Length: 139
Image 1 (tube, one colour):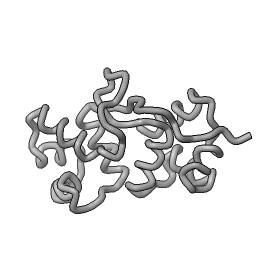
Image 2 (image 1 turned 135 degrees about the vertical axis):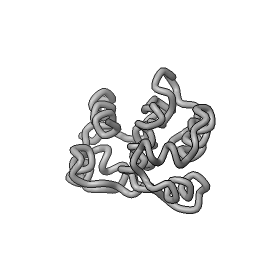
Image 3 (image 1 turned 180 degrees about the vertical axis):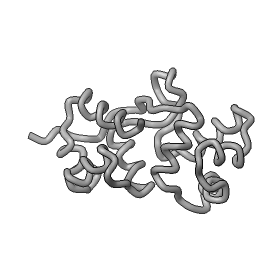
Image 4 (image 1 turned 60 degrees about the vertical axis):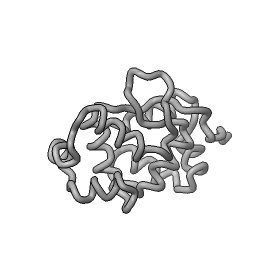
């Protein structure tokens, strides 16, 4: 779901995949493959992409995100707390390793983008605008 949202965000901002890929330092083919699901990105690259498009993760009914994508751990921790959900229960729901999830949330390690996308969906979070995109149109 997040990849389709990213694709629509690029289109709605009137950007090209080329301009976005240049901004985050990857090839246009790499971005295209990420969006169509045939490749993944590192956590760091994923956050760079969200930041370039001025996106963050939050309650999808919000019009503006409370925290930037760089604060994703805090956003997820808060969402877990608000839902009074254990890490183990969330991990089971999202089919991710509970130790990996716990280590990610405490800042001790990164997490795969695929697992992250499952967690965002499992918490019923979505993408919302957060600031001004840093992508410049390329002619």
